[in-house]
Every structure is written in C-alpha cells, then in structure tokens.
Image (cartoon, rainbow, N blue to C red):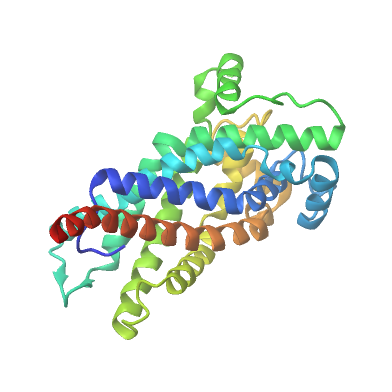
Length: 317
C-alpha cells in the first residue's frame, strides 16, 4: 500500500473487494469450524467437540461442500467489506496525514505517528461494520447454525437450496429487518479492533522492512509474511468480541445486549469461552491477512500497468 501514486477511489473499492472475496474462498472452511464451535447450543461445556472431530463429522455427513455452508453470504459481505475497508483506511489516513503534518522522507516512505494508523484502522472498522459486516455475519451465522443442527439432529435444513437473498428475505419476514443488525455493537467492536490492530501492525512492519531491507519491500513473500503476523495478533485481540457476536446472532440467543451476553457467557461457560474457536480463526486470519494485502496490492499494480499500456502503444505508433 504505497503512499505515492495513490489509486483512484473506484480502484480502491474494486481491489479491496477482490481481496475480500479471495481470502474468503480460500479460508472459509476454517471460518465454518470456528462459528460452529462458538454456537452456544452446539458447543456446551458438557458436549464440546474438537475442531478435528467437527471436520470429520462435516466431511462424513456433507462432503467438502459442507464446509462452505454460508460462504455466499460471507463472500458477498467481504466483497463489499474489503472495498469499504481499504477505501476508508486509506482515505482516513490521508486526511490524518494532513491533519498531523506527516513528514515525507525519501521517495517512497513517510514517517507517521502510529496513532495515525490506529485511528484510520478504527475508522475503517466502524464503517465496514455499519454498512455490510453485521448483516453479512448474521446471515452466515444462521446458515452455519442451520447446517450444524441438521448434521447433529438429522433434520432437514431450513435454508437448503436458498441463496443469500432468499435467506435474507426469510429472516426479515420472520423476525424483522432489525434481525440483520443484531449484534451490531460487538461486530463494530470486533471490526474496529481488527482493522486498527491489523493495519497498524502491517503499516509499521511495512515501513520498518522498507527502511531496513528496501530490496524486499513490496514482494509477494514479504507481504504475505507481514500480513500473517498482523493476523495472529488481531485474532487474540478481537476474539472475545467475535464470540459475543456469534452468540447474539444465533437463533434463540435471547440476549438483551452485548454486556448481557458477555455476563451470561462468563457465568455459564467461564472466561475461556471468550476465546473459543481461536485455533480455526487463527488459521483463517493468518492466511486471510496475507492474502488480502497481497491481492489488494497486485490488483492495484495490474490496473496501473493496464492503464499505462495503451499510452506506451500509442507512443510507438
């Protein structure tokens, strides 16, 4: 995410969207297992199932496609989320650079306060949460819960054969449109933490690598490694919000708010419940962070080359 030659708004949105879909498709099985383990009625302390057991059971009952239940909802959400995330982060950072008078050093890298990246990340997290993440996560949780309950009890699936729009319409018809924004506060807290920690760590590592090993800056391997490291820290920082979000969005949750859900979870399942599903989410976030940053950079670079190519061809005529 180079500061110079900044991409236009439409390209930021498109590149961010492609990055979001790419990481979703690659990492969704881990997201499915993580959500399954977090559902309170399917992961009680008396009948808790390990991630490996869930993998075996899902494959036995539904095959490989079983791991992608709810993927359409999350992929659609992440396409929009990815565009909004990168656009909001870079736009906020540009504004904060002007506000805090960031000094440019050399040809590529600027020296900025870490607070610029933190505040820009928080802005990106809040924006994506309010616009697309909460309804996307609500639909994904319903689809995963439906598939998991059908696998456990042998009943027919409520949402079988329905696309994202069909599921959304059914949920709205049965519970009202507010059901799609249930758990908005923990989602916002999770996404704000995600974006603030992920972008701050990635930007800091990017600047540090660029100064220490400029020949390695910008290549695919370096970007993947920095994205993976930022993903690890992000998981542990935001996991409590993720668990509260899943419980609030599940069918029959019956919570009055985020604090009520957190208090009941702590009383019933203990402090460890807030980090339930960490292993599969750690796998997903480690991969997704590297994939998202790499794909975003490569899409922007490809678009710039595509824009320059016709000019070069005209010059040769």
